Image (spheres, rainbow, N blue to C red):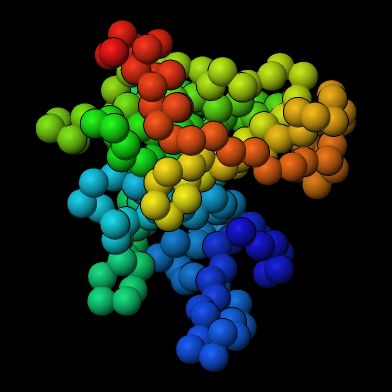
Length: 208
């Protein structure tokens, strides 16, 4: 995400054979709109390696108030296709989502949702995906490392899916809350083995 054009949009750059990166360009009107777009991530579902998910704060229909919703786009012949709102009753029940990412590990498709009460802290929630019905389902389980006094968010998985990485300030103690203005406490990156997180979810969800 970059605000270099005055609006929060998704930008892209490509690594060249010589190791250099091309100049960043807007990802295009199929993704970006006059609204805010951020957290463009691989969806992480089995068989959907060509699909990404992101958050956009746009009206669901003409004349409606803007809402923060998940949208998906599929890469076809080198072009991201027009974004579609990601319809999920479970995910819609989680307010103020700011990121979704998924991973397949140890017989489970795990989803991590980062939720943001704007002006306050992020928290992370775990859900599961059922490949048979192609639906996200509960139970919704809070991450054990959520801390009501410390911001922690921006989860993502390594390319191989073996680790989950996120940003937080646990070892620095409570500090100023993260705000849309860019102020906040100092953050570091943290990680856990994905298998440990999946085992935790299974135990809490009664699946193990």
